[in-house]
Structure formats: C-alpha cells, structure tokens
Length: 105
Image (tube, rainbow, N blue to C red; front, side, top):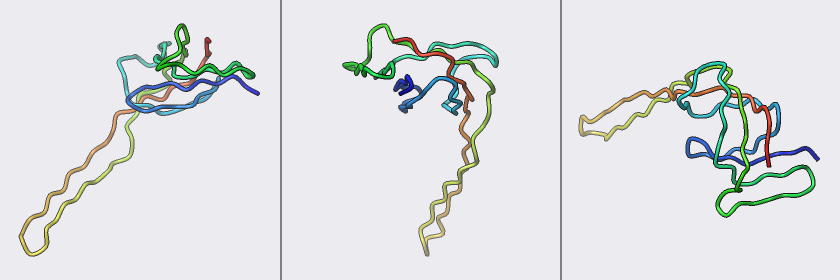
C-alpha cells in the first residue's frame, strides 16, 4: 500500500498521497513556492498507521503551490413571501491549487 497522510488546512481535513493535486483554502504563499503543511493528524508509511493525539509529532507534508484560483460563484438568496423582503448575495472562495511533494513521518 502507498504512503498517505491526513492533514488539516483551512479548517478542513484532507487525505493525501504523494503527487496528489488538490484545491484548498488560500493561504499566504506565492505561486511556485514550497510550503510545509501542518498539523498532520495521521500518517502511514504503507504498512504502519500512526494516529496523533491530536497531531503526529515530527510529521509534515511538503507541497508546491501550483496556482491561486477562485472557486465557483455561490448565490445565497433569502425571501419572505408577502413581506416585500428579499436579499441576494454572491460569494467566490479564494483557493490555492497545490501538489503534494512528499510526506515525512
């Protein structure tokens, strides 16, 4: 089995393997930069799984920032019938496209 890790970034948890490409909430980094993602909640070398309490000490995931993008437009609409009340607001989340380079246990 392949090595993998569970990491937390942007308030969400992701199960990642080497060379995975994923969109996460944007953080302070430039395009082309290499970043170290922590905390790592669990890490496996392919045969042994180490689960942290709450994080694995000494474990880290290195990733490269490929691009800074924006997510799809989400529209929130509220209405109360017969009251003349309607509110419409849109939102686009800033995202970072990253590639997982390596996982250190």
